[in-house]
Amino acid sequence: DHEAESFCSMLNGPFLGLHPGSVWPTKRWPAVYFAEIGRKAAEQGAHDLLFAGPGEEEIAAEVYDDIKRALPSNKRPLLHDLSGQLSLPVLAAYLKRLSCYLTNDSGPMHLAWAQHVPVAALFGPTVKKLGFSPRGPSSSVHEINLDCRPCGLHGPRECPKKHHHCMTRLLPEAVWPDVKAKLFAKI
Image (tube, rainbow, N blue to C red; front, side):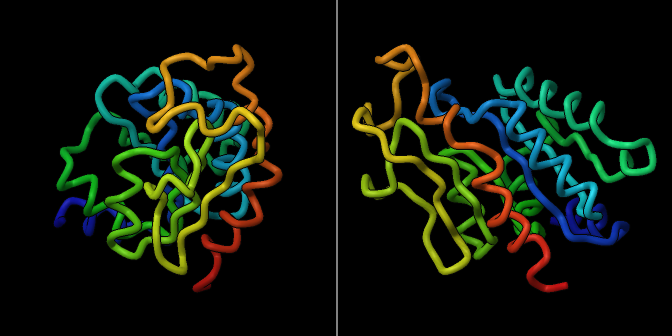
């Protein structure tokens, strides 16, 4: 908790947490979509904190590189790569300090909403009605209606229909207004 407190106290928020990984590949929103949200947030003065657990480093690196490439050099100090560096308790401490947490349907999503962190969750192969969604008034689930959803309780390793529309058709333009509102709600 002290590490997260020290880190965040040195910076002026708001803080957007980006978690592009998931154990289940079909639950992963495209890296370029995460990067688009991160870019928009940083351009408006928010710090992007990139998180990833074991096995998620590659997608996190892709998001980081995409955001860094798209940002003007004066905004790059707002991008912080914490992927693969945090234990679960330290991750929970960082999550607690976020203004908004943009995440796939994943375990860390539950660490965030349980601490009353504003969550914008991205659901593809799974659906909110299965009961594993974030709870509370500051949590939202972004999903699109497709006849093939849900395709499993946790989502399969590959899209059974071979198109992955549940994630690729959930566009950043549909998610950004919610993330922006959460990020700047207390400013």
